[in-house]
Length: 198
Picture 1: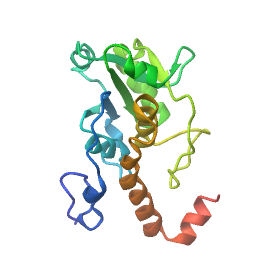
Picture 2: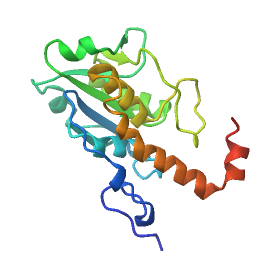
Picture 3: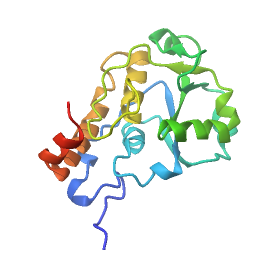
């Protein structure tokens, strides 16, 4: 029998994170496109990002039928947060000139994120943006396949801070850090040290 879960953060009630989740306004709209296989994951950081931002939307799937409608909102300029040769580094000038950005963020492993782009060609056609400087990830319970890899919530926080002011969205990392600490506690210090050496 599964443990009762919070209907909002989807964590077990004994480990509910809702008290730590802020509700932060942003000029930038964030559209999180989560690969379906990530939705039930215990460390679902895209959900944390969507709950903590007033101007965010989380969609789960592989092929997004409403994508063209979301991208064509005349109030926003859509860009894809994803590395690439033509990707521009995010900075505050992008947020202050013209219409605010619609920051489209694929959520999943690198392989799954690339699959989302392949299955949704409109994503691949968007101008790409990236982080100018990547702070070290606090995602200590997952082994990143490459240096500079971030969890989705960390990437969103760093992107919004670059656009709208350093430190403005750091509060969004509080529930993420509690989530990580809870996972480390659950696995035990010895297991964590063995599987995640410094």
